[in-house]
Figure 1 (cartoon, helix red, strand yellow):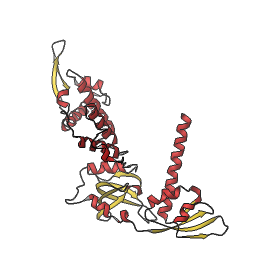
Figure 2: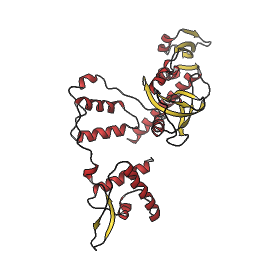
Figure 3: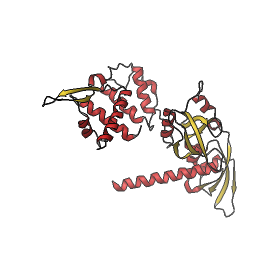
Figure 4: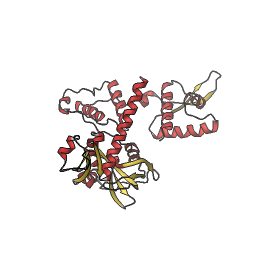
Length: 335
């Protein structure tokens, strides 16, 4: 469902909930933003919206009020007593789980919905923020970082059963490739996100790390055309992938003489280069996305020569840091 349609339906529900009398179609057209001016176009859109609300379970009531002239005209409203949820009763453990879930989904596309749900629960008198019996057991406040740009479209594709296509930079590959996937699920492992599904290019199930997806994730088929096979354990497939259990690999880097002491301690070998300005070192790593932020901390004192995926990961990390710094500077100037 598009954002424009979602906003229009939400405005329609709010309008029909707020009224005590039946509103005619013309009154709704004038009161609710998002409807076209033309009578026929409005009629078609309004009919679709009414059907959509009924499918969502919204109790749309049809009736009429006697007008001042004695005539009657069909109108619409939503009785609040039929729309409201029944009184909620949560145990301390259930309330603690809801609060914990809200903390975990820090930046996911459903974070706003979780926050809104907690706000409504608190307004109803359900304490979710501080549960005496459960709070000591939490110990830490976990975070699931979903900052990968590919997360929202992939999560929506899994929800809608829609195939997708994207460009993917595989481990140790010098060039990215276009992939076509029927997604079955998106899961997290050790702070990293993976999408699992049927790879149409390979004809078998595959796992892709979201951080290695380049550019946009695009729809590649109609909703409802992806079916998860019976008995498939998405989490088991993601955890068994070699990407999640990578073997150690060597990296060749240049270290500025007299600097980058951390990587020097990490190195298995350090060789002076002609000129005395740089040394060449061999480092061992397992995960380019994890190792790249560490090397990027040394900025111009470290230059990655090989492998290509680690070099590209460091470059991308530095570009993001530069972009974030520029954005922070602009906000400071505005302030």
